[in-house]
Image (cartoon, rainbow, N blue to C red; front, side):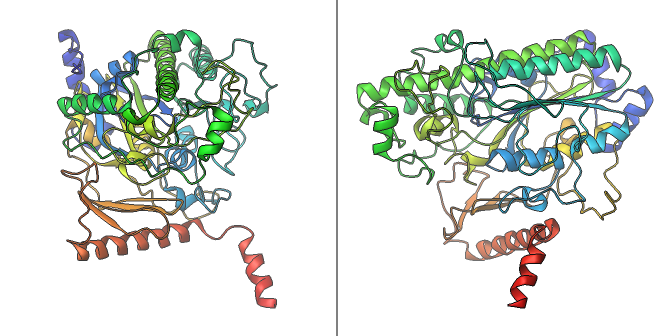
Length: 552
């Protein structure tokens, strides 16, 4: 199915033309003239693959996201960090995770660190968040981070009965199974409630809504009626789904590369063993991305069901996004709300058993079932890229980015190939809001934000250029400079070199052919690594430990 952009209504064209942004300065003049600052809706999915949404080549029904894409922009080369908490740190602070102690070793945010509301509140904004917070050692959403209202789910192991959640920093009682609760719906409903309160009491102020879902992260759990829509849809298997998605993505112009080779060997080191899979999950579980033809009938049945649940989780998220968008429309704020949609990392190859533990007798997708997507379907969800969540290859770090803003973006359904990163979201929002990012914070000098505003890309493709993008998570490392990407797996893994202009599937390693380029990029990566760790500063207890060591 070819993605067709929504047509522009002729009556609306003059209004759009007046609001088009041709350069960063023009943006500020537009807002000054109208005296209307834009609102912001930042939507984050959890472990959703690059190609899962319909507008990115998937077969999952995502009409709300497809509409946003059809009326706005899709970025084809946007990046996360490859993991949930460092990605959220980038979005909320505007810094690489290593700069703010949000990747190992973990610690409190440096005293000079601001979170997104700290920038927007002085510019007159009311700020709200609903969903997953997940900043290790980070401040409380209201007491420290300055959100005005916050519903946060801190239990990421249960979608039907979370045991840990807070409302405005106050703990909520655990949810019991059977109460009709589902995390995605609850997250959206709290966002809607916050927005209704904003319309009633603070309509004169612009708003930020940070909407962070915890799906389709494991466990695979979804309402029965959503799963039913996808039963039998994936019986052909992950190899067929990959081929079909790859074809649609090329037709859409999202990619121009080959389909990566399926990797049957690489899985997270913490995954369950084959014996544990058989004993705890059952004979239908598969620990590696094997050929679909190699699976038994029992394995194919369970694997097809797992993908149906994954699809149902995304489908439900899309339905709830539609409800939030409807509320914004009912407030009369739809035309001047800038919506961003991303996924915090690629789909996950993890297969683990935690939370309340998996009950093999329970219906798949129910509260008592604890299934994970696994490497076979993760490979399909990340089509056409290599590897998965946690790695710094494209399958782990490539994220869809949809940007929708009727008042300020003239383009409809267009693609943007500018490389970008989650660190760019905060400076983009700050520029559009007229919020200052300069000056000290908590009496400390503040390092410059490493990201770039994406505002110039709203007007034309290729308007945002940069020297490099840096990646590091659990010894997986990468740096992208122009179309060159240097990437390595694990602490001792060799550097691999790829030309992403024609090889985003990372199939043709050019390291041996261009050793000087490897050396050059490796040096830049190490310089950035050292500088970012230095900016974060030592962990609070490190000086004491060093002192004690000297005494000995």
